[in-house]
Length: 518
Image 1 (tube, rainbow, N blue to C red):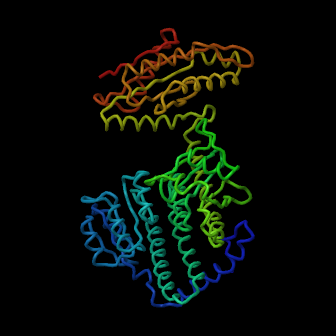
Image 2 (cartoon, rainbow, N blue to C red):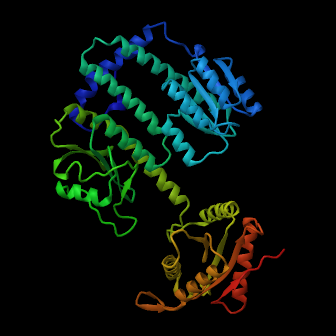
Image 3 (cartoon, helix red, strand yellow):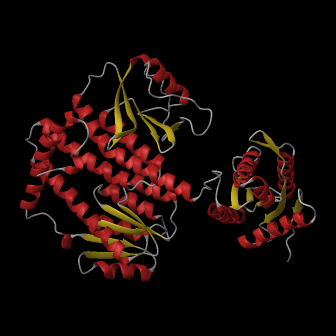
């Protein structure tokens, strides 16, 4: 029997994989199949918690031909039922009349960590999804639900639940096996739990947090670090087992150990940056002393290329455990592809919202940012500014100098504007030679000041291109969103656009203020 999933690059792990792992898996699954006393899917009990009667009935009807299904409409009733019935799967809405579905998830896991939970919600957010993952959710689904997709998730969750139960019973029957083989079975189980949790992760920081936490918990390291150099991302994530770690602390550790493969140049956002995925009380760097640390460096490899490193630090007086090293090789072979996939997905998301010429936000991102800012202004009762910018006589620039110079003007403009706006402001290429700036929590006075700064910054000096000087100017239109007079997104853009073309009509190279017409 081949185990292609565990084929990895390092030859010294082949015996580890094809030996104990192979034999343990075969024993595990053969004994599971032979034991007729284990639960079958039709024996499994499922609880649906949702205060929407229509949704509750729909989910119940889709499941009750294959499982034993219970329903309730509040968290309190769910707690009472969980106290009486040993449920295999809980399906809960995130927003319940009395409590959050996350509390149902936490309660279920507190009673039985192997109970599977699916959270269903029409109010999804990255924060709630991340918290659900940390609490051990099996799946996180958004409404409106596809029954077909829902049933697939239920079938997978039930299969996972039955696998856990069989594994536990098998472990109980193996009380008399050798300690190293029992440890190995525990390794298999922990790797399974880790990969399942990791596959649910939504963002790179969460993938790194889960990975580093698993390393520290599994092998008792003082500090774990992941360094990644992939697809233009050059980042460092670090997690101590206790305390907190700063860039200076980490740089000192690497310097003290004469570690050459990671640099700590922090001139801009594209350079290596320490990203602490979790913060504990206390400090690391002085206790234990830097001189008391030793490390293991395991490359993160995908197919034939190295994408980074996992560096694990121990105190020097801790005995080197070869089993830990072997575990880390297997561990990194599993996690490397997930990390690469996470960065590939991040790159794709960024490219989908980034203008390819300038690197700033594109039209799509501008529209999304404007919608979010309108919602935020309404919620917080604040104002914000919108500036539209158009390069004057841009067609003449292209016709006279050529499109390469036209592109250089566009890039130059984004750099000049980018140097004077705030971090929280959004600069986007609205289309062609037209740009937009969104200024959160800014009134008319502040927006007008910035618009005039842009006007001056562009006109005050020429663009140098191929040893030639090119002067160009811009026209600007300003609009203010006031929550006291709510506007739709398109209305706000129209006000700024009208103001922009007023600047064009009145001679260009100037700022015009748009007025709300009631």
